[in-house]
Length: 254
Image 1 (spheres, rainbow, N blue to C red):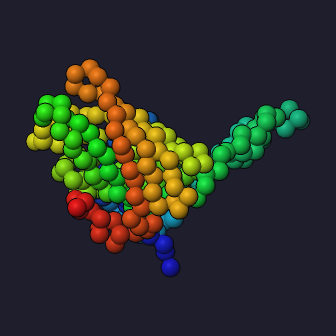
Image 2: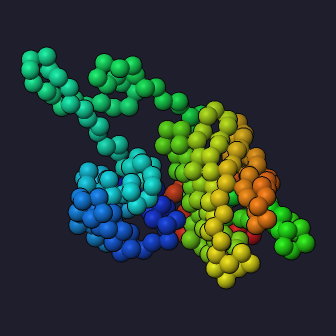
Image 3: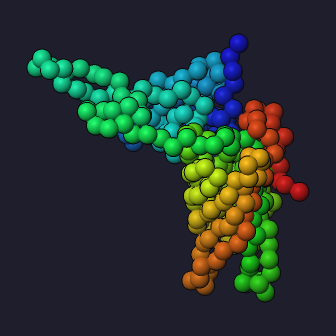
């Protein structure tokens, strides 16, 4: 029985794309790269349902371009890497070269192993001061899908899952033991107070040993050419990224 690919579905939904939109973006990415593909809504459906377990390389490259994520974070097996090496007899061989093994006589490239896995649905909560509204303190909330591959952690809010409608949030983080560090980006609503402005900055969190909460601070810029900061918390809601779970949390947090 096929296993549905919840990671890919979660990423697509985080991009606010239908299956048709996603397939069109894959075709466009292939054209721009000079590697045309025939991505279709049906193919996206087969990936998400697990009927097709792994994309061909031409699709894998387009998937990484459109989502900005490595293929492993999209719920697919890693694509084999390769190198051309002299065989000592005047010819060359194509040799597999997975991460962490020597390539061309060089030393191995070790990867830091993360402690635990943070994939799942998280409630993201941060506070900020609005200088234009009398220095009032406001709270931003999103249900975010976090996907982990190795020590990289990527997150996108679900389409309807922000306290302020139409304000998608993305996270790009790295896990080192209990420290989680990276960047955040939020596109504010076009009809909201900030009129569609795009804000971004840095984020550093400490993960609790339970693996169910991360807390720390964000830093970013303000309208008055100033640098602001405030508290940020991620709280685990569900470790599943299945279709039913995504649907359950595709709503504004309370």
